[in-house]
Every structure is written in C-alpha cells, then in structure tokens.
Image (cartoon, rainbow over all chains, first blue to last red; front, side, top):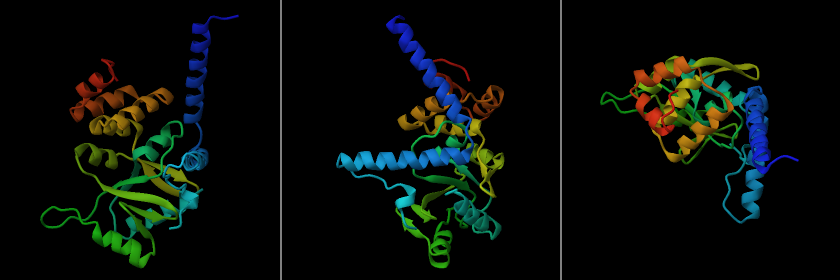
Length: 61
Length: 172
C-alpha cells in the first residue's frame, strides 16, 4: 500500500516522463500522432454537436 | 508524410522569389521540439515584398497560389495539400532574428527550416496571450531549453523580466 500523495506523485512523474518521451519522437511520428489527435477532436466535437475543425485529411485543397 | 508536399511548395515559392527565406513557426514549430499537441495550422514566417510605403504585399503571393497553382483560400489560410498554411511577415526584431537563425530540418525527403526552440519560447512570451502561456508551460514540461541561449535572446529583446514574472519568479 502507498499513500494517496505518493500515488498521485508517482502518476505525475510518469506523465512527465511520457511527455519527455513523446518530445523525443521523430517529427514524422509526431505528425502521425497529430493526425490522430485531429480525428479524435473532430469525432468528440461532432458527437457533442459542436462545430469542429476538420482534420487535414478530410479537407480538400 | 502529409507535410512533405507542403514544404516542397514552400521551397518552390522561396526559390522562385515569391517569398524570402522562410521557416516553420507557431504551434507546429514548437511541436518539432516537444510532445505532439492538437493544432491545425502551419504558420510560416517569411520575408515578404513591401510597397514603397513600407506596407506588406500578400496579394501577389495569394494570386500566384490560387490562380497559378490552384490552391484555395480558407479565411486567413491557404490550403496547400489539405494543410491550412498562414504566411506571417517577420514583424519585429525578435522574429526577424529567429528567421535568420532558423535551423534546417528534413521532412520526408524534403528540406525545410524551423525556428529554434528558444526563439519559439521567447515569441510565446512576447505574444503573451493566455493560450501562449499555456503552450509555454506545456513545452517546458516536455523539453528544457538551452538556458544560456534562451537567456541571451530574452535579454537581447528586453523580455527577461516578463519571462521571470510570467513564470512566477523563475529565471530561464
């Protein structure tokens, strides 16, 4: 068993480590993640009935 | 790689003199160095032709992009290969210096440039909107800047006090 404070601290440290890992990814990989983020944001906003910016791949230039 | 055709167009615009030296800035520039975060725009800082009165002229560039190259305008953006691109003139001494010192990067098989991280952070402080400060904190959590480089930029552009004040008294 660990205290709630220790558990929260541990989670915060893990999140920070994950951010550092993500920052070190190659730019190409970050763009792939960004495209997924755009899709997820679009789906959530659409589901909530809010106007949503379309992901790049749904736009037609 | 979705950005590769975009930077190929940017490189052609630079080569053919429609824009001057350019570099990726804004949220996409920051994302080059930090964790990915949601954004839709590709901000490009560049030097642009100016009139004799010193006004920036975007019209000939936009005419070329739409009439000659067939891209569409979406509010303040040009949609290039499905990506909304915004061209921003190097509007002050900080951005002009950032553009001059931008670093070369590879995107797919193409080359491009991105502002250096410490300039991007300084521009966030200079702009200073709540969303810029949120981006600043997020960036700093995922990647530390080169402190000496950042301090020198902040001092050179009179932003060291603002940085310290915005960051609760923390020096760079």
